[in-house]
Image 1 (spheres, rainbow, N blue to C red):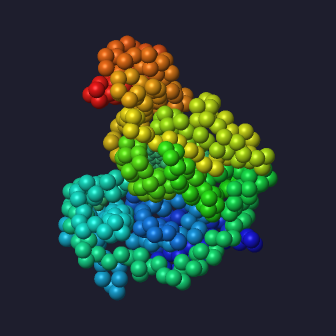
Image 2: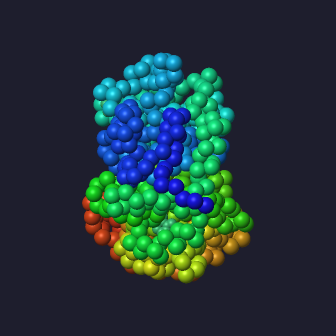
Length: 481
Ligand SMILES: Cc1cc2nc3c(=O)[nH]c(=O)nc-3n(C[C@H](O)[C@H](O)[C@H](O)COP(=O)(O)OP(=O)(O)OC[C@H]3O[C@@H](n4cnc5c(N)ncnc54)[C@H](O)[C@@H]3O)c2cc1C
Ligand code: FES
Ligand code: FES
């Protein structure tokens, strides 16, 4: 297929072709400066406040429009999507029902955060409408707004505005902006890869796994871009400016997710929101843990493979992936191979991938009836904050539930990489689950972990957190008897 040298999307129902260095811009800058749509605001520029929220719709999918942070989303990764900004919510000079609600409930003062809140609440109404819901609960609204900060109004009026949205009379805005014509045009364009050079930088969006591998071989210094939530922040802070970007979003098979027997297979481009929806019934503990991972805006973009590849010792999904026997599948121009997750991280933010290898997908187990799994996270704020320590524990019990066939205990934030607490696992496996020696297990854990001190917590504090997580888990195991 012939390549193209532009990014194509629909913005507020109109087709846009973006060329040259604009492809590398954060979407928020493109909207405000190039498209002259100044309703979208930029405050933190690192995904934390939600002022820059816009709605993104996936062409060819039945999923609802969902909010993303335009300040960290590079224009290039929005190729093939429908984008809707706050500027377009007014129809025939009439405010949208959500804008009216914000006014009626006094949901704004200086107004700088307001467009972001309106977009986040519109995303919630779109999603709930698709699910056939008739009303919104306080918790629905709070969950939808974890990615939005307001510095002056206070949150109660905004929550009141959200709860008051009348879903029975709400008419989805997707009908207004997503037409057969736009769907057809996006579908066609997504078949051709993107290849462009601007000011010495190169952008590639290949359409197949083998093309990604070929490009990595040809341009060894290039950077893979998945959801871009880690990379987008680093770029905005001036910490990195990749000269050659290989974006994965046009490779169809990387968006696939499937469950066979008790194994989940996830492509590198599957977002955390999609994963959460898919695992809602199969792995309740993991999917509800994702509620305290970042914000809806971040989860709508970020991938679990990006979390793994970013290799932070406090990546929140990593302890779970360690206990759920994850296999990491990698590719390069030399072929494909798999790596057990235990062998993936070799040191602080270092992966055991060979030169030009990249991750295509991962596979992990979901808990069965005889497995008892719990996930933990401690951070200074409950929502939208990075962990000091996180953990996941998995015990597979024998049929009488009196002893463990296997136990796997994993922690993040207690060393240079996420770790398995192998000594504690061995001690737990050798004891009965009815009358295990809790103190001995907690003491053994201290030999397994060696946390460092940093701004998120001292080494001593992290030891206490690890101790408390395990204590809570063991208390719950005892209650199963
Ligand atoms: C506001 C905010 C809140 C956040 N909150 C949390 C949180 O609560 N918990 C948490 O754990 N993280 C959090 N993060 C970090 C981030 O969202 C996650 O790490 C996310 O999973 C990264 O996925 P991504 O697809 O966006 O990765 P990207 O930014 O696209 O990539 C991350 C890194 O992995 C590399 N990479 C990506 N895909 C591949 C691949 N297939 N093969 C090889 N290398 C690859 C990239 O080159 C890059 O170095 C937060 C980030 C922000 C901005
Ligand atoms: S400007 Fe704060 S999240 Fe984008
Ligand atoms: S109204 Fe001023 S920041 Fe929210």
